[in-house]
Image (cartoon, rainbow, N blue to C red; front, side, top):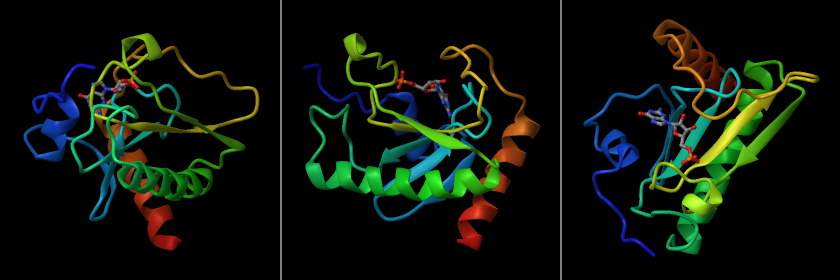
Length: 142
Ligand code: 5GP
């Protein structure tokens, strides 16, 4: 498998070299909005540890990401008055992975509303700001 590239987009976001719409952060994980959301509130949860995908991540780091996704899922249900949640996680190009720092997609879903195809359109910055604020408020409310 290809080695971890320290210059991938999400590594740059983690280092603060690129901006992001942060939703949550703790010692082990960082969560931020996907800038080309497939549904409103589409959030990415990433480990702070360097890992390309499920094939090289330490099990404990993967568990931290799962805990983060669990937390975001509960907040997204409230913040977006969702009927369900889709969680996706892709590995290597053959598995659908495009950005090579492990991430879980957490997507709040509404009955009868289809997801957009991946990377269909870049969301407006003010919409992303509002959605990040809604998610952070729901996280704070517990
Ligand atoms: P993958 O197919 O690797 O699981 O998905 C990568 C995701 O990263 C896609 O959903 C895409 O919209 C998102 N993405 C790509 N570039 C950026 C970026 O610069 N910032 C953010 N926040 N998301 C990005």
